[in-house]
Length: 45
Image 1: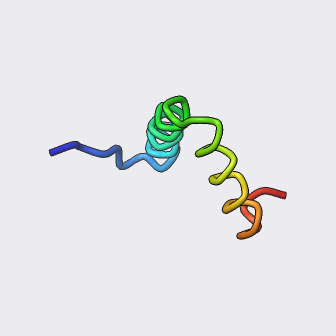
Image 2: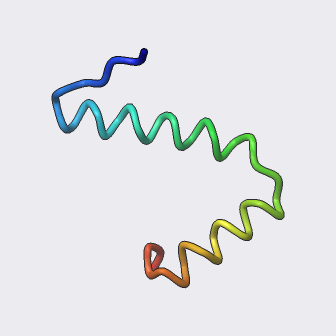
């Protein structure tokens, strides 16, 4: 079972690293769909 940092800033860095790794594996079509979804939910301005 993974252990998570109790330090909020360290946990934030861990999550960003996981997300970046996952993004690198997506196809262009998947990235475009993700972008559209995030844009329509106002996560991207």
